[in-house]
Image (cartoon, rainbow over all chains, first blue to last red; front, side):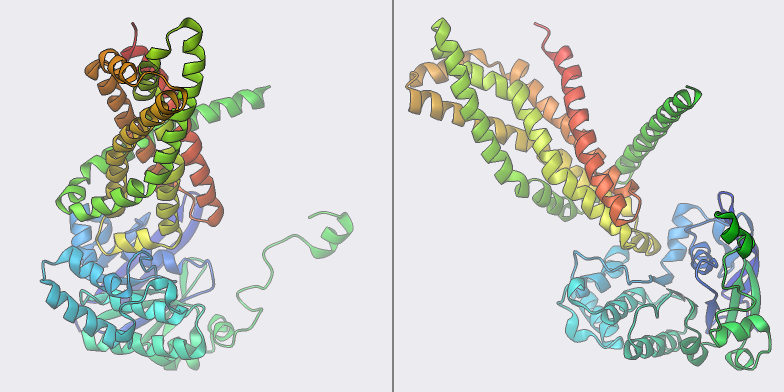
Amino acid sequence: MSEPLVRLENVRFAYGQRTILRDISLSIPRGQVVAIMGGSGSGKTTLLRLIGGQEKAVGGRVTVDGQDVAGLGREALYALRRRMGMLFQFGALFTDMTVFDNVAFPLREHTDLPPELINDLVMMKLHAVGLRGAARLMPGELSGGMARRVALARTIALDPMLLMYDEPFTGLDPISLGVIGQLIRRLNDALGASSVIVTHDIQESLQIVDYIYFISEGRVAAEGTPEAIRNSTDPFVHQFVHAEADGPVPFHYPAGDYATALVGGSS
Amino acid sequence: MVGAIRRLGALFINGVWQLGFITRFFWLILVYSGQSFTRIHLTLRELYFSGVMSLLIILVSGLFVGLVLGLQGYETLQRYGASDSLGTLVALSLVRELGPVVAGLLFASRAGSAVTAEIGLMKVTEQLKAMDMMAVSPIARVVAPRFWGGVISMPLLAALFSAMGVFGGWLIGVVAIGVDDGAFWSQMQSAVDFRYDVLNGVIKSCVFGVAVALIAVFEGYDCVPTAEGVSRAITRTVVSSALAILALDFVMTSFMFRG
């Protein structure tokens, strides 16, 4: 089996005094779609930022395609990022450009291709996400789902080896959600890329991914294939898959004794 | 008491930090300015938004300032029987002080605030991060062209402001009140020195351009990425630019015009 494309070894990360990730080890094999799941604020997005080199781990190692991300200089990091694509939570489209120019942006910045060829490439990418007809629209004229698809077209503009998705399903209607899910899977396979999806949408993820990691309290709490996750008896996974309010992840934020707080008049 | 001293100290340290940040940011802009000139359409676009779009407010304000200068100047000068010198008074006031300063203040509130808002909102909507993840430096692509757009348009706007002001002074003095047309222009021509008056005024407007443009892009880039953060950044741009313009004007005037 070949070396995984992304590997995190004993990664530790903190914002100042606040520890986000305690000890994370995981890997993204080539050609696979991997989901990283966990509650809000569990440090999922931070993981993507570490892989993309926007943050540096306090301890441990993050390697992408054999390169230690934290050790790269600016030029080398930018060279690596040209082979990565990241879809932001709300698309992060450039609001002063048309849909066409948004998708053309990475091509124009990083290649010297003639305009005709850029036009063809952009149309192909937009066709892949079903929005060739929206090329002349401005981002403000798109619905949430369409904006996400345009951003996806822009993400794949340079045919990246690694695709990263930050909460791609948030705030979408069921149809758009299904469309995005299918696109993530299809594009990954068509491009021969590898994908990481950071999400808390368990049902959609179970349908499209190859492997799932659960993150809780800065550690990998559980992992497995969708099949294994569905049948898991692990209380944490059970709580997550069945969306139970209380369980290993408590409903209450840590607090003092309730009765004392009521009688004493203050916490 | 200790608390007050501590707050004062914190305020001072914070100020020094901020000064350090803005200096480093200025350096980064200079380092990443190459693209602003090799891909000139990026800068031209900002020149249009900062410069051309500010033309109306600058020209109209210049005209009114000139009209007022004409009225007040005539009213004062005629007491000493020197109303023929109205052209000199209007022109010197404008090219030395009012042109650069008032145009700078207007530019900060019209174009500076817009630049801060635009960059701030790009930060809120993660556009800057997205650009960075696409291996495109936001400083080179977004910040530097806006900076240079501001730096280039400011002296041009100040010059237009002064020209419009002189025209306003002429309208009031010569057309409306009846000061001698020939005296108005010839006195102005002989009294206004190109190097001493005009060039110093241009230097001032260039310095104000750098100050306003730097404050505007810095506040936008540095803002807290929330709606409230952007609104605060815009306020800070206008306030800091105004203070910077007035303080720099005093310093430069004291060096340039010592008699």
